[in-house]
Amino acid sequence: MSEEYVPPKVWTWDTESGGKFASINRPIAGPTSEVELQVGKHPLQLYSLATPNGVKVTVMLEELLALGHAGAEYDAWLINIGEGDQFGSGFVDVNPNSKIPAMMDHSTTPPTRIFESASIMLYLAEKFGAFLPKDPTERTEAMSWLFWLMGSAPYLGGGFGHFYAYAPEKFEYPINRFAMEVKRQLDVLDRRLGEAEYLGGSEYSIADMAVWPWYGLLSQGKIYDDAGTFLDTASYKNVKRWTDQIAARPAVIRGRMVNRAFGPLDEQLRERHDASDFDTKTQDKIEAAES
Image 1 (cartoon, one colour):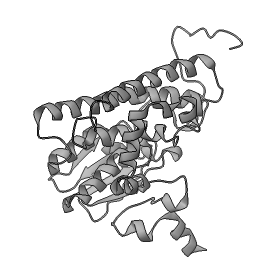
Image 2: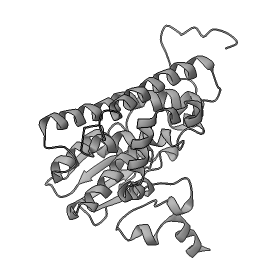
Image 3: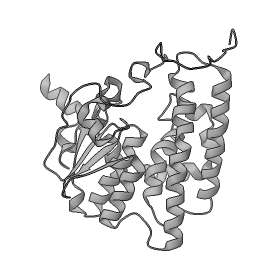
């Protein structure tokens, strides 16, 4: 830094913070526009984007459907956070924190709103009796890793990811600070996955579905530019084994596509309303039909 920053006695918001998401960052809550949310034909209505937090839930829904839980059929509506869709009044009614993902369950009277990804995953696991181990010890272990993720991912996303990939300038101190913490977290995961096949133990659970979109995709080099090389994620052999094992699951492949508005066109299913949409409504097919 060219000169030391001296914080004022009282902070005020008088300029954008800079970086990729500067236009949507603000220190106040609430809606900025009146926008009614769309509602499809299924009881479960998901409003999301295929960030790691969004992928957690779409993977779980696809896994539930793969198990034969017909009640897990869902409509997935795209919420483009880069354009501020999360500040529409309808979305804020579902999630007053204006973060994706958010869900409405219209099978209850009145409809139930669920926000925060871990809350949605627990709600679905309990609703359908799936992906939480029945054994009390493994269930508790899975829950511990689910909440580990909720406390750890902000260091990877808002910490390392922001300063490494999104900040308007690169500064050594914050990048080093958060790189060190993310590598510590990878070591924590690597040690656990050297003891057990999955985070909860012998069973694939919501803990794996929650952690994989963050640390699995990081291990594959699919988030934050070339962060996988920078952090030497290949050296965490147990994380790599687990990452590749989960990445090969058909429901995970489908879940990553839902509400995706970036990357290869054939991997983008911006809205999902039926299982057949994966074959007929990916973005490459939509654009080919329009051309």
